Length: 178
Image (cartoon, rainbow, N blue to C red; front, top):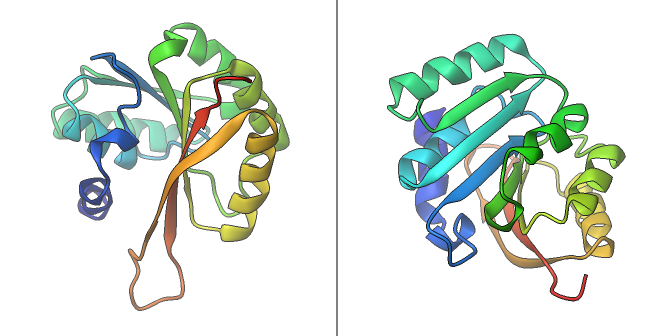
């Protein structure tokens, strides 16, 4: 829900979202953007943030649009139904790479190999990776590291205190030499 995600965003320093000296950032939500909970919380926290979301589930896209309107950020949050891997490069074309961060929040199975490859080849400046599965997070981070990204920060969130589940937020930046 929005309040749980807002708590997670509140615990994160702004530099999780702002990684360059530019005033305008674009955040591409890919790999199951869902009902827009994370992107809406981010857009509420940062008034200069523009969001482009991709989600396979058309009902989730409808919910994301309604949520964005309800929370007053519909003018800065656009969502499209489709496969994140297939739509990634098309979505990225409309954004300036130097101030675009890609946020991925995949299911427990992690990112597809194809989406990892597209993230790497895009040379986007930053990737914000939210994960609920440490095993697939490790697998994907190793691929992204080999592709020229480095971990610059990570935080663990116990959003479900009565369970063994937790969320991890990891920020990766493209290395200068890659």
